Image (cartoon, rainbow, N blue to C red):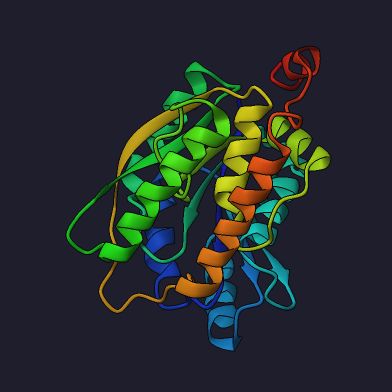
Length: 245
C-alpha cells in the first residue's frame, strides 16, 4: 500500500495553509488540484510548494468543478505510483487528525472504499443536514444496501485501481454530484465499503461552493439517472472479482 493525500481547491487560499499544517506530521506526499482558483490562492499555493517539497500542485486553467478535480487527482496519483488516496477538503471542514484512522482501515482491507461518516456539531445548517439524510436513504435504495453511512462526505480513502476502472467504464458528474454518484457506482461494481466516524464542522464565515438550488438539482438528476439504469449497470460478477484484486 502506497498512499498519498489529495486536496481539491477553488479559491480557499485563506484556509489551505492551516489544512497543510494539519497534515504535515503524517510524512505523506500531498497532491493539490487547483481547480481554476484566482490569483490570491495561486500565490498561496506557490508559497506552500516552495516551502514544502512533499506538496505538488496540478492546475486547471479554469474552474471545471469538484468532480472533474477529483478525477484529475485520482489519475495523477495513480500515474505517480500511489495505490490509495486520502481526499480531504481545503476549507477546514475535515479533522485531519482522523487521516490515520482512514489509512489503518485501508491497510486492513486494501480493496475497500473508506468513507467518512460525519459527526456534526451545531455549526451545520439545518437544510444541509436534512438534505444529507435524504441522500443517505436514496443511496440505500440505489445500492440495495445500507453499507454507505453518508454518500456526500468528501473525506475518503480511495483504492485507486478500483476507482480508475470504474471511472473508465462509467461517466460521472463534474461538480457536487460526483461524490454520491461515485459511491453508488463503486458499490455496484462490488467494491466493499468501510465507514469511519469523523468530526465535520462548518467554519463560521467559511467559503462554500455548494449552491443550494443548482447543486440540489444536480443531485436530483444524478439520483434519477442512477435509478433508471439500475440494475442493468451492475458489472458481471467475474469482472467485479477482477476489479477488486
